[in-house]
Amino acid sequence: MFKRVLVANRGEIAVRVTRTLIEMGITPLAIYSEADAHALHVQLAAEALCVGPEASAESYLVGSRVIAAALELGAEAIHPGYGFLSENAGFARAVMAAGLTWIGPPPEAIEAMGDKLTARRVVEAAGVPVVPGVSRPMRDAEEAAAIAEEIGYPVMLKASAGGGGKGMRLVHDKAALIAGLAAARREAAGAFGDDAVYIEKFVTEPHHIEVQVFCDAHGACVHFGERECSVQRRHQKVIEEAPSPFISEALRQEMGAVAVAAARACGYVGAGTVEFLVGGDQRFYFLEMNTRLQVEHPVTELVYGVDLVELQLRVAAGAPLPMTQAEITPRGHAIECRVYAEDPDTWLPAPGAITALRWPSGPGVRIDAGVQDHSVVSAAYDPMIAKLCVWAADRDKAIARARRALRETAILGITTNLALHRRVMDDARFIQGRYDTGMLSAPLSPCADEAEDDTLLLIAAALDQRARDLEIRQRARCASGALSPWRRQGGAGGRL
Image (cartoon, rainbow, N blue to C red):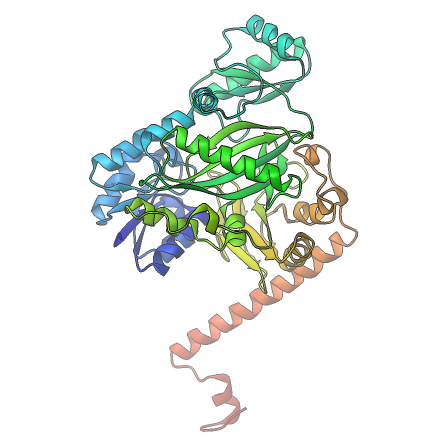
């Protein structure tokens, strides 16, 4: 096993990976931008190096600086987390060329699955069902219109190199198609440097469901069930849960087997996620494969009792998977709420300084956070600051636990989407498991006691912060030789 590992990331995922490294007795190493010098992931690491200014294009995304930092710190391996360089095949090759271990899939698998059109062709050859459409970029609007007429409106335009909802357009007729194609190409070129756009049939009553797969270098490949990721805004996930309340047990088994087949088709090793679109008729289609650890991996860990980061490290070190498919059994239900620094009604980012922070606790509650009191949330990075996760014996209890945990959470100084999460947990469609990806297409009704809850929580958080500030000042006075309160009040040898 490795002795020193560099986590080539920031925020909550860097914190999460660092904690597993510490538990395994591995020395965690960090990188940071100038803006992140005092970030939580830096504080938890044994050693850290600055790799550039605040802009990620000049720091976290500069592969040569990341590798140089790893070598200077004496790292044996690099864990990329998610985002940034985690799905960059060129960076993975450079890491290995530098004599370091890449904690991720082979570069060839990253390339095969990184381009959606290539991925579509690879999985089609393996017998994996794909959404009706074409496996090549559109040359022009006329060709796109002809294909749309053939497969039938509505259709979805998608950037070939895309992700995170960039370069995607839902269109219902030819006029919208022509305008949407131009817009999707511009957005794709700006986001990915590639304006290739292809076309797929739009699936009605769509559910976004993904399957967690894991393969080792010895030929074993298993899956850890599915995650329902249909609570989205602008094609970005907001809430995930496992297992899905929508699919049947027979479909669950079928999708798991298909996901493993897709992973095998590209020679996969490590943690990966195969994403599917499932229609209201429960017919499912391959969307894409994410060749990294997913943001929402905690719900799988909670339901299956596994540490996916530990598995990543062991498989990267050459160990075989310690379990077979027959030994993987789900237990209970888990829900994850992504906490964003953004306005829940406009989706606009809301960067700023956190003046006070209170996370929930209690049975079945897990917080993966990259911030703490007085952290500054920068506009230069993704607005997600934490993930609030809960586990319970069944879905109804998990929703009740999430509702309680959300009402215990208070963040002062910035605007967050906590109110949105509370609204979802009180929404009849979510409670009954009858929602799809269109759930957030219209504003949700505020909770009846939303304003009252927020006011009470803000007061409580402010009082908590005042108590902590008083304690810190008192410790400082004691450390400097000043008399403690009980000495002042009780006299020498006295007590309160």
